[in-house]
Amino acid sequence: MTNWDKVLNRLEEGNARYKSGNLIHPNQLPECRERWIDDQEPWCIVLSCADSRVTPEMVFDTGIGELFVVRVAGNIANASTIASIEYAAFKLKKYVKGIVVLGHEGCGAVNAAIDVRDAGNAASSPALQHLVGHIMPALQKTPSGKNKKAGYVRANARLAAADLIARSKIIQDSKLPIVPAYYRLKSGDVEFLSEIKRG
Ligand SMILES: [Zn+2]
Figure 1: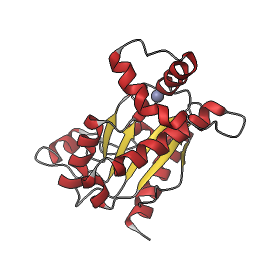
Figure 2: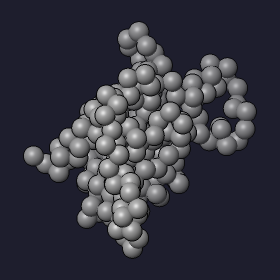
Figure 3: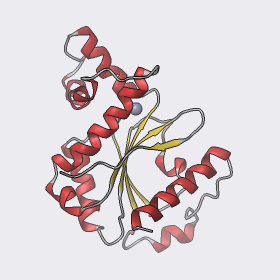
């Protein structure tokens, strides 16, 4: 079993607890805070949307010092999220075993990008234009299947995962597996997509 397989098992087990409501809330007591005053040993990086319904620590039933979570609307790979992930991938490389890019059902950022594309106008602010600019390449092909918005969210998670490698030598050199994933709001299920292949 590879290190990544072990991490995936741990994520899937935590997600199964979350889905069923049988959470164990590990590593959240005062002694856990004390244990991690001087350092941290997170075992997985998660790039997630800022959406209040998608909380990685809860979705995977984890606690303090376990996940290195970077959140931004649309889970995009921009300079700030890349720099944050570079820190964990390089400085904490003894502990981190992989990166998950977590897209989700009903993503407002992906919907905003679809609206900007369809309207053919600029977004309502320069900052939003920057954000949707990162998502736009994921909208170039119409996804197959009935739920097109879900297809765009999956494409956007794959794009951000590939961008982490394409835009960061540190992340590329880390050799960490990078896996896009899709979160469903009602069931709480995380569907892991294929690992991004490195060129
Ligand atoms: Zn979102």
